[in-house]
Length: 260
Ligand SMILES: [Zn+2]
Image 1 (spheres, rainbow, N blue to C red):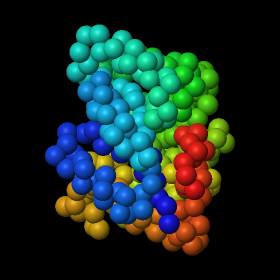
Image 2: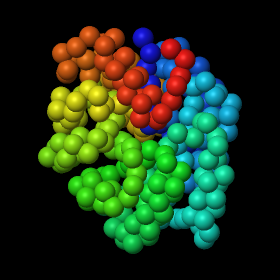
Image 3: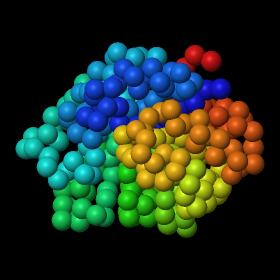
Image 4: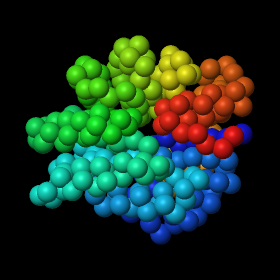
């Protein structure tokens, strides 16, 4: 079987001491592609390095995360826009991400909107998909996006409100789900309701999960086969069929022609 991780932060500091091990473990777990998402300039440079080192496995998503807006140094937005534009011909660059809006950071709401707007315009210009963080802002983001000509949208860790799911699917958006598929009733409900053709798998590593069977474990792409098994059980399908469809979705979403 072949598995994919559409949303992981491989250039996160937490992984820096063990990144070779994480990459080797992903290969052993039959994970054939990882999209490493960035938070800011430093993690974007780290992501590009990893994609260059492992071109058959690691793909790059570059962007400014809404949490990073808080301490964004002067001129970093401009530097990021320049860096990403320069990568236009880089085959490893497959998306703009992780970008979005987070309601928990209302004190910097105006700044979040500015950065998100700049990132969406960049995605339009470079004709790239976007990977979106939408904590508490899913409906607002779904309403905002039609004013941009961004073609492909991935709502990562889509959780609520469940009523927004049909709206997202009607617009052709994708959702990605990770470890909570195994233990969270809310996420299991999302997986049940989303058409399999709009679903992707993720780990969002190195984020930690505090429920079994992931409690106390370092998050790695090694979790993906367990997540796909849970999806297959929810969808009442064979694991191999779910894995194959998700691989197909992944290639289609990121416009990749990977080896069969
Ligand atoms: Zn993330």
